[in-house]
Length: 297
Image 1: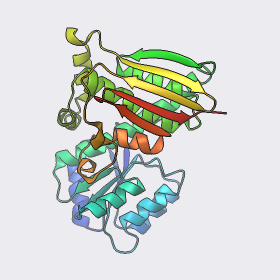
Image 2: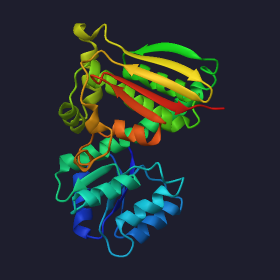
Image 3: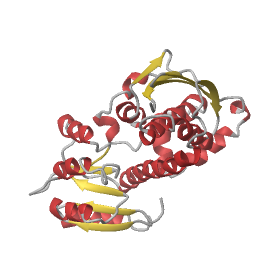
């Protein structure tokens, strides 16, 4: 996301200097402040930021309180927060995850880790913005749909289907993002065999989309699709999403935990479960997931 505006908050000047050095050359516009009070003044004062790199432990208003206030402000709730901390214990990370800090960095960290996590957070933000535009584009297209089947093969098709179906939902932005996460999971992991650790490396090298396109072009993947079956009834929509893979152990991905908070990927299913759907249920062996959501009355 070229030209992204980042707010960096840390009470140690040396840490601000390190972050500035690490992100030098990444085409980001950095604003640096040394405490939570300054951060909140900028955030609430109308300045727009694409992400916040936030130190957890600071005197006065600490990072947790900054995050808590951001989550209670509709204008700031969607801004991704990357929490950096020297405390990486279960309770500290779990608290941040509950408040919406889905990205964590444990000090000291390497440049590659910072860049990968920042890029991942900005990619999700860009995905939300793209979906918001597409939701408007597809508004009204699916209004008469009671039941139907769809199949997608590419990331572009996944975006279109997620945006289109979300126009029937009571909360289109959240549903669109949740559906997109599940459709992409079916494409990249199920159909193309990109593993968790492979994706982390691809994100770090900014090669993920290129690798998806390369694998889609292979003859062995030509006939693989992610299928979505949709049924509406009263104020509920049921969507079954199935890929061509062998399945996976989804149980580790239903909850946000501290181990994946330290990686640039692996949180999509858990976030989708929290914010998008009434229910989410995987079917053995894990290559099918069924979600329900509330539709417009």
